[in-house]
Image (cartoon, rainbow, N blue to C red; front, side):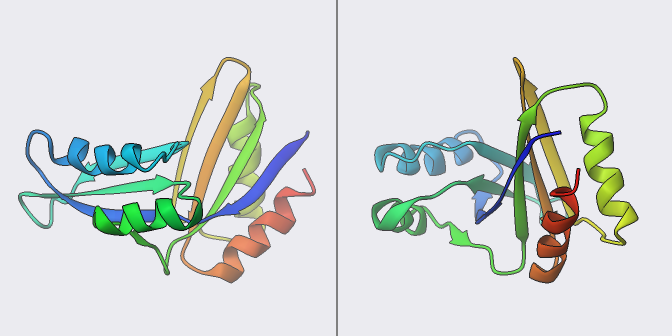
Length: 140
């Protein structure tokens, strides 16, 4: 199985849990030419009235400046790995099973298939876990 495996920086911002809260952040990124591949937003149930958004990639100084202006910061404690592959049944199982068998615990996982392409983003608590996961996944 051919996997494209890369480390990615994840940028995080707090948002107000109200209509338009997310779109305000996204508009700032759009005006700076940011072309996001991945975005996930969710409420922060432990903090009523607040939410959080995670995005990637942010490329170059102009985009980083816009992201910071919008309240984003590059995560220092979320270590992410991006996997791209041709979609097929069982792909997610093979990836997560390989990581589990290597004794690595994931912080989170997201994925989608569009057409014949599958993209997954896996998050780890430690840089060393992300590196170990990459080495294990290269053997698939």
